[in-house]
Image (cartoon, rainbow, N blue to C red):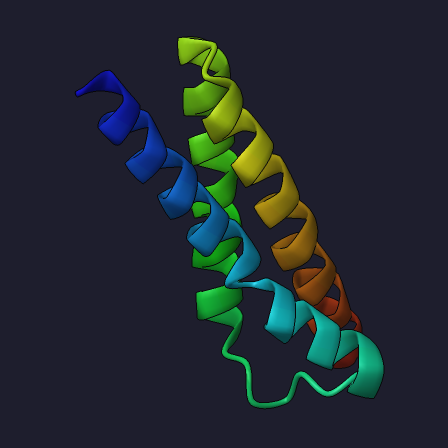
Length: 87
């Protein structure tokens, strides 16, 4: 049963983390973020930060790794969004 539980966790972490990759790649290629709501980017960023803190508290490498990568992706998108708002 432990193997099944861990497998589900790994697959969920992979899907959640790399689900943001196409968005980050599109933003990197086009620089276009006008259709992205600031609130959505902010909530996703905060979610990744909180999951990362939770993973650190629990010393869970899967949660830490997945959310570190996710934080990088959404952080990049958020940075581009903030720059676009200043223009």
